[in-house]
Length: 181
Image (tube, rainbow, N blue to C red; front, side, top):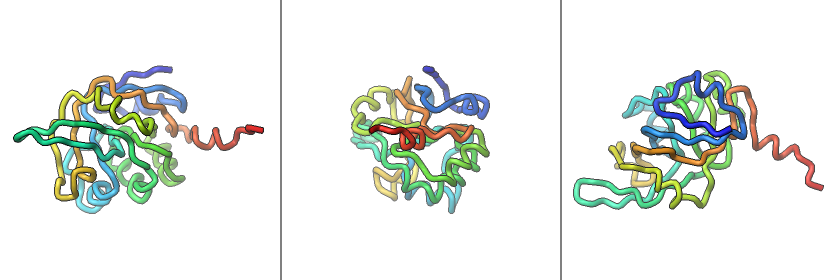
């Protein structure tokens, strides 16, 4: 099923997503990689993440005067965020976007908080950037451009595939179970 969501994302919306659904997001999304996740858990988030979409991505940014332009934004491997993601979900994040799936603790947190993990296709950074209307702000630039939290205004950002859902469904596990002989 194709689903269009607008941020902030409610638990009712995320509870209805199922593995295999194709999602497009409009509104604000935040990039955050492992350094930003670690700091959010240790110090608190610089943005209200209740219902927020957290995108595991290290964007390529060009600064023009006092403005930032997004050149490319693609997913990074989510497993690096495993130590922090259950806490980020507990803090209220609405959806997580990344690449490669996450661990059992994160899967359990997705079920507990009625959230989902969406996979972005690696290698599609030029496609995804077309959905970015503007860079609203940046937080923790001291971590470096890829590790900072970038607040993006997006329109129909996607396609994203629900690969881990609030019922414990896991598309990665389903694929592993298949007999390809």
